[in-house]
Image 1: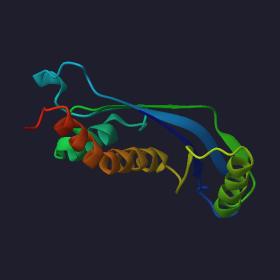
Image 2 (image 1 turned 180 degrees about the horizontal axis):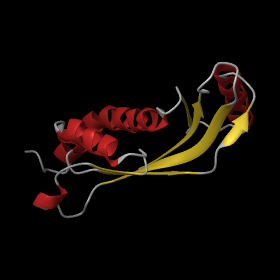
Image 3 (image 1 turned 90 degrees about the vertical axis):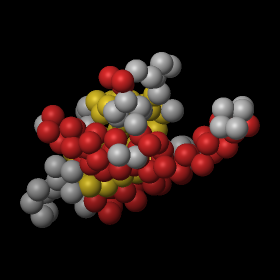
Image 4 (image 1 turned 90 degrees about the horizontal axis):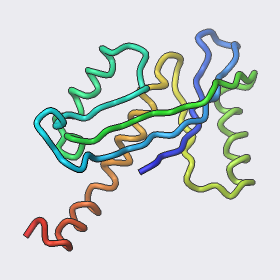
Length: 143
């Protein structure tokens, strides 16, 4: 599953510039699950490995995440002089003009962009879980 997004990050100082980054999260499930692949994996979400390890630990306690791989790819930052609210409004208008319905607009305080993107991906997995279970039942895997 691919989850495209725009990430709008606030400035460290009030009145400073805001950054916008376009990216996409890919979520994959291994074809064969082995003991070494039982924990979720996060690539390119965080600058520090300790943050990635903490996120993986927290989500590994949820069955729906136990073997998923999350890969975040993003383009270069664009710096704008708008406030977060103005930048989000402009992106909304742009996506409306392009009739794009499958791109999320995320906002985060400085240094928290990875958390915002991870939360977005996690929420999408949680939302799809009931449908995934129903599909497994229909295929006879949970009888």
